[in-house]
Image 1 (cartoon, rainbow, N blue to C red):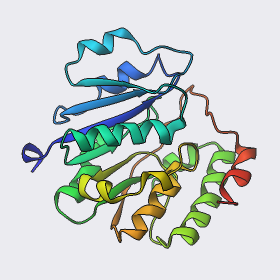
Image 2: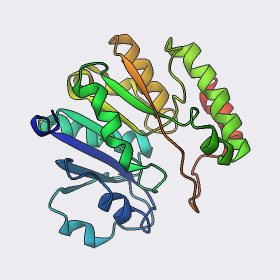
Image 3: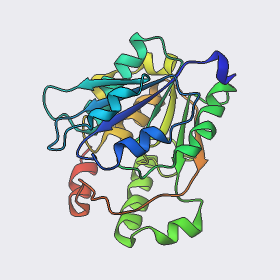
Image 4: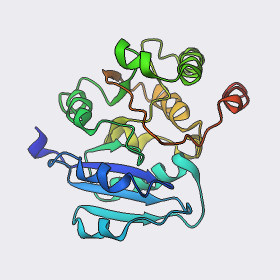
Length: 224
């Protein structure tokens, strides 16, 4: 089924110059297109990426945030006739070896959206910073209550795959440009009665710095 489907990866890029080439190099060979969306950070994209004939570089006119950058990649995937879109971060926190596991439920018509779940790997969960772990667990409960997807764990995980026909039906104006992006996307999926599949995978934490301050999370998520 992989051979018959056109699969693209969308990577919102913001200040991850030392990670982005490694992320691209680790992508599976069956990926047909790689849309890297430059979100106007202070670190330019390494020019060596242009040597990869699968890479398409898109540029925002200003900083729109992870959601705004990802939506630009979504629109390009739709216009290019892609079948499945995988969203991946540029900072090497996500294990690209799990991409086949993410796209399989979509290829087999068991789901329209598949996303990573870091809370089933207890060994990896133990390594997650406590503050981040507590914040994610709290947000997971709030998101489940708000969206109706009670069987969905780790909803703020930004490593996911989405089927193009369901993507076309979403109202992008209702999907947040910034930190509420993943949550608002799941809320929109609920209105389309999309099926969500969790895929267990570990979280990876190296020397990257999060752009989201933990103390800000309640103020960003609770009102929404």
